[in-house]
Amino acid sequence: MCHNRKLFFFTFLVVLFWFSFPCGLNFAADWSLSPGIRVSQEYNSDVLFSHLDSWEDFFTRVEPRFKLIGESERAKLELDSRVIGEKYYEYGHFDTVNTDNELTLDYAWSPRFSTTLTNTFIKDNILETELERAGVAGFRQDRYKYGFDLTGNYVISEVFSVALGGGGTFSYYPDGPYPDLDLWDIHFNPTWIINPRDSLGLYVNFDYADYEEISTIQTLSQTLYWRRDLSDTTFFVLGAGYRYTWTKYEFSIPQIAFDPTLGFVLVNVDREIRDEDDGFIFNFSLNNDWTERFTTIVDLGREHYNAIDARGIDRNYIRMTLKYKLTEKTSFNCKLAYDVTEEKGTYGVDRDYIKVSPSLRWRCTKDLVFDFHGSYEYRKTDGRDYDYDTDRFRSWVSLSYWWPRLWANH
Image 1 (tube, rainbow, N blue to C red):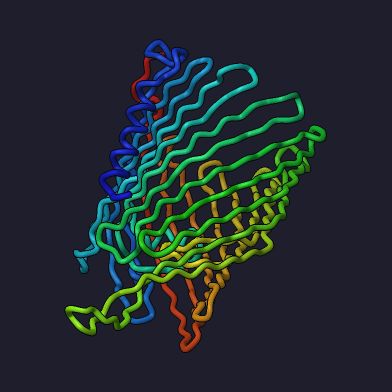
Image 2 (cartoon, helix red, strand yellow):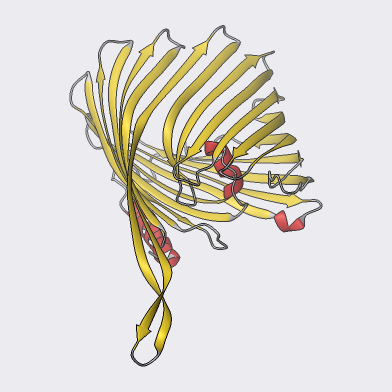
């Protein structure tokens, strides 16, 4: 599907979204518009996070944002939109304007049945997005990403419910070098409340990834998980399962052929390679409030990840967040991350990625906030015939202001 058809399809969904409002949400509902803005100044020791060269620079980031909410007894619509502009001091060709938009409609058709329809549109730079997701650094290229998901939830009884949904995500790279991606998925999630503190669930997901003119990757995964509420503020989630992956690679190779009129000629012959793979997956999350001031959040697990260039990667990760409230207006956070990614195949590359990111927040008023951030990242790459490592340091200060319900009809 070409980019214009994807955009048309996404626009059609948004229009259908707006003109198919249930009668429970109209202009008599509670509508509000909340704008905000954030201004940041950052130092980056290596904008491209590359081992080949260092692109050190300062830049200014401006992020205007607004949130539109309409809510009634049965329906809730929420539009969250922001624009991110970056201006670099020395390397002006890094200047960029990105955007992140999400439109969500929740509707309760009955006391037992509800649906959630979500549309997204994102324009970002793939380098930072992949680092946040899996610690994998790619080229710094623009990406346009459209997506939608429709999920329905049915409460069968007081202790048993079922959710079923699916959708599509379409990624487009106007300047390359990555292949455009159409990603479709279906998910099924029954849950059972054993008692007020324990619940069990099964999450089954099937996705079909079509990388334009390169490969198709199908993955079926199923995870059984258990949530335990240790207290009103502390809980953990433990899940384990298995996944199956089917991959089809398409490529062309040159061959010499004989033509009765032209003689021997060089032609491209299409070839296809099919592969199957499976593996164990798991996840564990612990949210613990040690005191009224000190909180820790731990996430670790193993997943199979389809990279932006159609590679299959096994990803092991651990995340930790420390939160400490120093005063009523000041708090300290520190995020720690460690990723190990293992690529499949003869020429697979293994990577270790470490990130430490402390921050200090000062809430000057209820809606005016100062943030001071630091970040250190380290990546070690091991290939078949090479290995290298690189690191970078970032620091930034930001000022943000939020006008909650600046315009409202109630």
